[in-house]
Amino acid sequence: MSQDNEKRANMGQRAGQIGVAVNLLLALGKLAVGLISSSMSIVADAVNNFSDGVSSVVTLIGFRLAKKPADEDHPYGHARFEYISSLIVSIFIIVVGFELAKGSVEKIFAPTAINFSLLTAVILALSVAVKLALYIYNSRMARKIDSVTLKATAADCRNDAVITSVILAVSIAEHFAKVKIDGFAGLAVALFILINGVMLVRETSSPILGKKNDSRLRGLILDKIKEYPIVIGYHDLMIHDYGPGISFCSVHLEIDRRLDPLYVHEVIDRFEREFNAYGTVLTVHYDPVVTDDPELNELKHTVIAVLVDRDNRLSIHDFRSIPCDGFTKLFFDLSLPEELAGREKEIKDMIDARLESLYPGRYQTEITFDSDAFN
Figure (cartoon, rainbow, N blue to C red):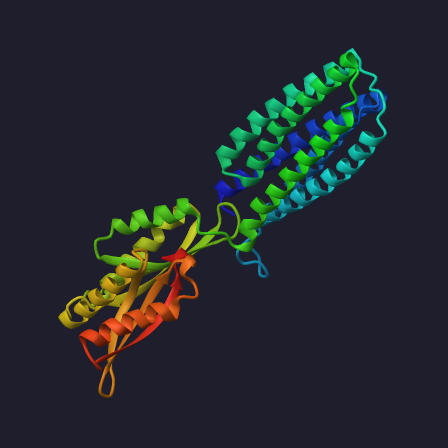
């Protein structure tokens, strides 16, 4: 593990340790007040803080496991443990929210009076202040180390501050206005927890399943490509995320076939080495392309014109030809947007029809359809 990743993991662990201590103290204080005052909404908030404490424990373990270096069985390291820990936290939050919802519904149908006191108000107000402080701390740490886990933790702290403020207002309203709304407030808290849990599951499972290419790293690679004049085009840019700060990338670069292969190889090596500083391993595939064949260029422009008429997002690469017995075979890859999946035959037929109308019997096409997400 690099020094930057080691430092990142240590900072994440420290945030987790602080979260465990603070949330458990808040949970114990609110649980005591909730039981004394017979307030379901305060008990729900206490359980919410307890779940946050457990979440911080899982986060702490996740950052610690993510620090483990690569080994024989896991040559890409263990950084994905951070994603796994986040997913476990999200599922736990949903379970807690469901249980709280059940208890709150029971309180709605069998309401009991809240024994509100000054101690209740002080504990809840103090909790709001502490959660806001945790929100600021985790937000800063999340920005500093670019952690999805700590971003979610910061958002959870902010939400907790809002929830506790609502519960304080409900407790005061029940005490002075004599209205039985504690069960409804508890249910609202539970639903809020459930919604956040579902959203966190979606967010944390995305990198595990293989989300779309990292836009920041993709942009960096494309900016670097522009710095190399010999590169005519690129395609098949793929980024594989093995955890925060660890990724492996591959890209195909189109370069004029007439250039010295040894020179091209040296340029590609230099291009790949530049990305070591960004915590990624980049592998480049060299695609030599023909640029000095007027007939092939004319055919390529003909195909491009057909595609632009159909949808200007369509593009081609690796355009080449092989003479056959009595005709010429045209080979190329076509980048297909997701919305056009299933239209491959229609698009191929359009291209073949145009070529046949312009050059009867002379050309046949062999098209490989690629996902637009990598081109």
